[in-house]
Amino acid sequence: MVANRRCNPQVVGIHGDGGANGMDVDSGSGKSSRKLSVGSQALAAKQLGMEVQSPFGPDDLYADWELVEALYGHALRDRLSVKPEEFALLLAEPSHNTRANRERLTELVFEGFGAPALYIARSAMLTSFATARQTALVVDLGYRSTTAAAVQDGYVLQKTVTRTPLAGQILNSAAQAVADAKYTPLRARCSFTRQEVKPGEFQVTPVDTTGVSRSFLLYQVEQVASDLKESTCRASEARFVEMEGQNIPTTVYELPDGQELYLGAERFNMAEVLFQPSFVSKFNGLTPLASDVRSVPEAVLSCINKCDVDLRKDMYSGAILSGGTSLMAGLKERLEKDVGELSPPAAKVKMLAAANQIERRFSTWIGGSILASLGSFQQLWMSKKEYAEHGAPLINRKCP
Image 1 (tube, helix red, strand yellow):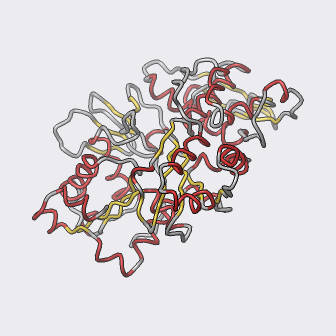
Image 2: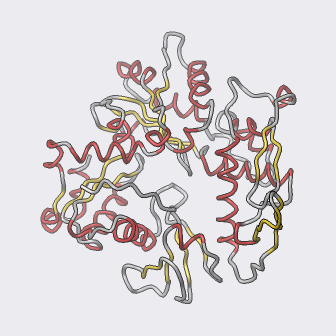
Image 3: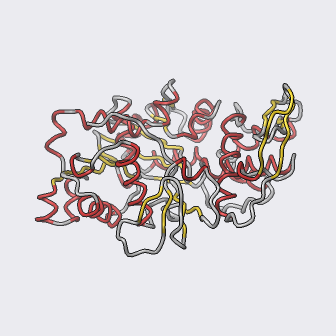
């Protein structure tokens, strides 16, 4: 087992002309003219003409499999320094993943990387393993979406999986809108230099970005917005009303170029999007959400209501929070309060969250390491021989 922990950007730099620098990888099939740059170092450097693209589609599932192969190849060979043909792979998947996507991933693992064995586990199940619970409600607040899923006896109940687009990405957009309204538009890190000319005095010099793609500039701007969100965003204790928040003390955030933002009620406005989707309208440039978009508390309650009646008590009292967005200050308490208000009077709502931020953010991978270390798990692998005999569809029976 490889126990090293590595975290990589889930986007890829694409060079249509084949020219690239940094951590570059060729496309796996060899049939594409695209040259791909993968990894933090490659995406930190300004490269003329490089577009930045995500392998995920609108449904938050893999869509561009050439990029998927490049990301896995970089993670395994470059970051973990392992030969994939020598290691069995346990991969986490979204709880709403489709049979077709699982089969395509299976083909990639066995044919693209030559792995000797594979197991695909749903993320909600792995999070429950990380918290030593066989039965639980897992609320995964990620980047593109928030997913609530019921786990019973170690298996995800697919009929209960409920999703909402209210998650980290939309909060990043809100943070950017807040900064743009208070200051000139956020700058990409590659668009300026900042040097100390005297102790405590800095000079900011613009850098020419001619030839730099719009997608790369937007990617870098979002990194700044994401840090702004993580540093300042906070969920209010109860339903937030903007007029009541005028006397909230301000907090200061320093942007990479040295400019300072003073934020008061805006810190709570950003977070309130998760609880009141209509708050999106308060941020310039954000596309209004459809009227049927559920708030995060509504998604949690919908998931519980899809469970059998005799299971709901366990779901109310054992909801596990995971994912990067779950680290927001005040979110656990606010979510517990709002779900409680939407629930039947007899329901005892309890949100559970690891005190350690690393454990909460990476609970899926921690659960995977626990699962893979169990002696009883070794018989569950799908082997390369089984793949050769039965094909990719077997993965749906081996990994229910």
